[in-house]
Length: 516
Ligand code: FAD
Image (cartoon, rainbow, N blue to C red; front, side, top):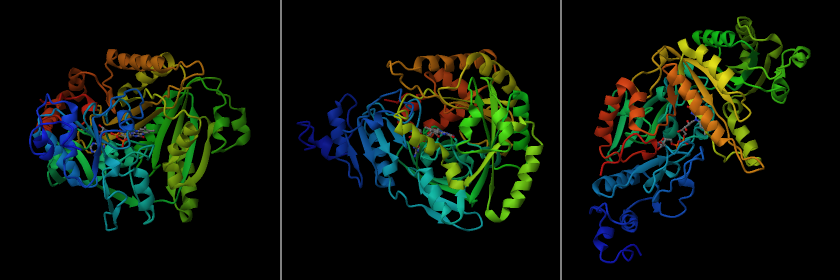
């Protein structure tokens, strides 16, 4: 079948080491890929899912999808592509939860990392410094379930766990634990990588350290993460989950910064902005209990802009009393609106997997697979007040379309040698605008409006010179990427040339052009 697809080209199809000229039609490239000796397989149809991502705004079909069964499958395909002159690009696809096409490869090869074996082969080491060895295509939720069986857990998370290890380590993996443990990329001991040249390399802080640091937060540019060794700590059984409101941004941010500066305060610190909403406390009552029901029922948000502090303390049942005392002491140091204090106690896994519960509800309503024009920004502490005053009062006038998260992290504890780009201050804020552009009954949606709003936020940051960095960055031109990386651009580009000289990998990031 393969050989018959291009008459007279049988040598190309039967011998994968023979180059395929770049002006050959896709059918010949398909042929040569199809003839590779793999444990897994390559498909050229059913490419619909690999053509889009969670952002649901970019639809770019690949030529082929590799379903690898082994690391050697990935290496074989990479070597084949760099030896041929077919101009193919390759995107590792984790769970496809990127927002602007970062995991797509238009007319290239998408590697479905979740099919990489040994999938669900999660090996746990319970020594002094416990860790787990997993496939790069493993979902964090599976790692959590497995490590909990041993009373252990990774320390640093994302808010949503149905993402792959390779996908989040290519960015950073930031959530409310990052002030304490750093982002996920700072909690990795070792990686196995297939580079852009098809070489399989094991790397760590001590061994091939340049590749290790490049790949972490490296936007998929230097290699494909096929295995990762992730640091673990003791897992609590339960969490105390607390929310309280502020109407004054300065008081809110002062308290958040106070909490992240304390060693043994809370285990998770986040927050979110509420703009133009009413009845917010009543919505919480389904899962949180007010500290004082009478006072809580008298609180009226009246559409004011409010800031919600969200903190969590981990505990096991025998520590319940001391946890309550410590928590009360910590809360007494804060200046939230007293009537708005709500709390609940839930199992650790339920807290960590909280966004999935929301996902199930949104899927049931058919509003999960809609466009998501998200914008994630890292803002230096010294400029956050200016940002909040302008953006939450003048630019973003409601958060009906989705949450707006805001919380500080202290990067003095972060490893600064990864590829992640952050503002140049010890403390910065993550501000995440996470709207869904749900189509209205009329068929219209707020997508264009939300995109314009994002643009206004970005323009304000640029005009006010806030030294803001995008997280999960997206730019259209290399000039913008150079500005994103600043004085680290030369190093990033040099490493790209070293590990992926033909710029085959992760074309959806739009940083480098494939070299012909
Ligand atoms: P994909 O979208 O499949 O891939 C992302 C990028 O990584 C692509 O460029 C891809 O080519 C590359 N890549 C994928 N796998 C590999 C690999 N094995 N080796 C090398 N490169 C690879 N992020 C946070 O930090 N904190 C959060 O709290 C958070 N919450 C989120 C909640 C939701 C609902 C969603 C949709 C996203 C959230 N994110 C969060 C963003 C998320 O971490 C990134 O979008 C991440 O890349 C998604 O992982 P994925 O497995 O879907 O990756």
